[in-house]
Each structure stands twice: as C-alpha cells, then as structure tokens.
Figure (cartoon, rainbow, N blue to C red):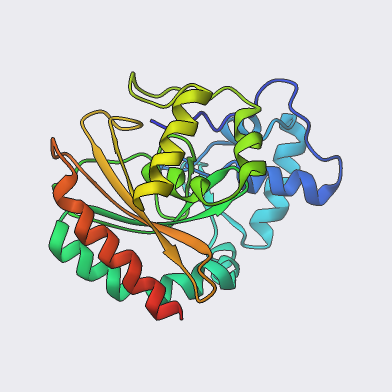
Length: 254
C-alpha cells in the first residue's frame, strides 16, 4: 500500500485561488479508479466543503475535472492533455520506451521508469504482465523514495542535501522489511552507489522483489531509474537485464 493521500489535520493550504485549485487537483494523486466524491476531495485536499464545491464546479466548467452519473469526479481530458506538455518526463519516456519494451519481453513482470521530484519518485512509465504481482501506485503516480528500489537509486545519486530532507520526517514503514531508520537508509544508499544497482525485497509490496539501476545522461548525471518488480524469491537473475536496459536508455539520451 502507499502513504495515505489525505492531507494531515492542520496542514497548510495556500490561501490563493490557484493554491486551493491545485490542492483539489492534487487530491486525485493515487485516487481510486472509480473517482472521488466531493467529500473525498475535501478530505484529501484539506479544504472546507463549501470551498471544494465551488472550485470543483469551476474546474469542471474548464474540463479539468469530469463528473460521472454517480456524482464522482475524475481528472478531465483537458488536464491530461496539458500534462503531456511536461517536456522532461515525456522526452525521457519516448527515449526509454523501446528499451523498456525489450526489458518487459525478458522479464514478463512489472517494468518501471522513475524520476525524482522533490522527496518522491514519480512513475513515468510502467509495463505490467497480466499475471504480474500487483503494485502500489500507477503510471504518473508517486511512491516513497525510501521504500522503492527506483527511489533508492535516485536518492543515492541525488546528494546529501536531499538525503537530509528525507530524514527530516519519519521513514514510513509499509512492511516489516521497509527501511525505517537512518542507519538502514544510509547503508542501502552506499550499497547502491558502490555496486551500481540495488535489490529490495518486501519493502512496499509483500512478496515482491525489486531490482533498479540508474540511467545517466550525456554528462553522467543520474536522470532516472529503471526497475523490475516481480514475485520471484531471488532477484539476482534480473540484475544484468536491468543494468543493460539502464545503460541502453542512457545511450539513447546521449
């Protein structure tokens, strides 16, 4: 499972109209497929119901949100179109997709491409076999950086300032294996840097093993992470394929 998207009590929401509208749109991150009710949007955004009702109506008028016959809301097609204008993930995704498809044919599991945004990992692309283990989140969704192999790889190469930011808050535990202490996190980051990949077991999805490797651009900067998540008991056999895919994407970017 993923961290609850409901805004904690007392969390500050921008007083501007834009800030409140953004809080409403952000409420749809990792929302259920059936959409959200007005009450659900208000809870997730931290806004009063009257404010939520008024702004949701405006966003629906602009086709940024859509309402179905049962009164539930989803992200509208216009917002999806605007999201596609984000050049960094889209350019990376286009370059990586052929390689990810090749990796999928080898693994026949969950293949993911992630990028870093703040203290979270964003899933830019995910290819999943029909019988693959079911994962938390979705394409375009966010995952905790300390609990996913792709997130750990990104954090390992992001610099000490970001590591300190992550450690400012308690490391949320999803399973008994999730990294939950500073010592565990730093040891895992050091291992990821030293060997060039990382393998995590049961860290966010019970019964899963995840292998990730960094993607580097022409200046050798880590710009993404490739991972495979499966229900295998041992992920070592996935390491060569994942590392090869990461190198291939890097060559494409160069």
